[in-house]
Amino acid sequence: MKYRKYNPKKDKQAVLRIFQEAGWIEREKNKMKEEILDSFIKSGGALVAEVRETAECLALTTPGTILYLKEELPLCAVTGVLTSLIARKQGLATGLTAQAIADAAKDGALIAALGMFEQGFYNKLGFGTGPYEHRISFDPASLILKKKNRVPYRITYDNWKAVHTSRLSRMRLHGSCNLYPPEITKAEMVDETDGFGLGYFNGKEGELTHHLWISGKGEHGPYRVCWMSYQNYEQFLELMSVLKNLGDQVHTVKMREPPGIQIQDILVQPFKYRKMTKHTDFENNMVSSAYWQVRILDLKGCIIKTHLPGKGIRFNLELHDPIDKFLDQKTKWRGIGGKYIVRLGSNSDIENGINSNLPTLTSEVGAFTRLWFGVRSATSLSVTDKLSGPKELLEELDCGLRLPEPKIDWDF
Image (cartoon, rainbow, N blue to C red; front, side, top):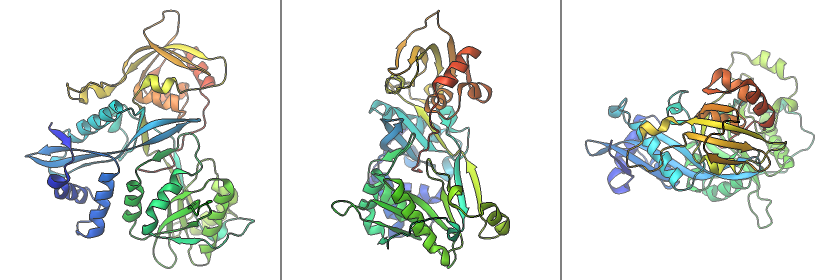
């Protein structure tokens, strides 16, 4: 496979065609669609793979951080992997994604994450599936809120820099991501052709403190909340009140349930509304899916940033990383497979080797990442994923790694 960095002079039209053939943008060419492409490319790294001297596969990455409890860990977000219609099933996407991840690891990323089109494909590169995310549809008029909101400001595409800054300063919980280049927010805003924003410029110097970015058309919706950003729960309630005020006309709002919040708590008679609207265009419901994946790129870097309560757990770790066979032989970073002695506790550490006096956990990197990140318990993963060990060790890990469920809180 011949891969290289994206060259805008040579590759722009070919990559635009890849976006169109993949269905990410419509085939009609216009200035806005080229603006989306340019913003995505500017938001991070871009590698292409060639067929007959033309770019036919593209991998996009964006730098950021991911929150592990209270630690900010450098993140590589894989924001797009696209293959043209003539280059499918040639192994280009797998190899190009592997190379993009290796480049990010070399540049200091400790974690990689991505949104998957289907479970199984990126598992080949060591990714493990995150937890279920809940998406709720409800009548905004049915929200139970005690406090009335102030009149919000209208937010447009021209405010993309302020919107990005607001997203970076939002309240964050375990697992949440920040993507740093502001062009990624610009691309996401422009990509929503029916998008509009509502929010409040309450910062000391007039900064945008909390806002909603919404996609919707038609008199009655449904409207979709693409994201919401707030710095505290009082601001969250004010944004929900903004949504409630739309309820005179908009019959349904769809949104991802925010981290740490159970939207059903602030809905009146949610089961009645679900029954009344079932099989209609304005159906009230809750659906869940696990659509993003994550993997460790630097094992030592992640372990030493792990601070857990309790007496600590020591064990051997035999870790298999499947990414190695998809990397070019010249690539120095070969994944994180190997044999290690791990101690998890208030001050965690790791070293190479095996201690015959310690129990051994055997795992693929995706399964171990899920354990370390708090997606599922060791015992659960031993049943459904590629992780195994003595019962006593699994139970000890179940107790020692009791983390909040990670929520990425920034789709890409």
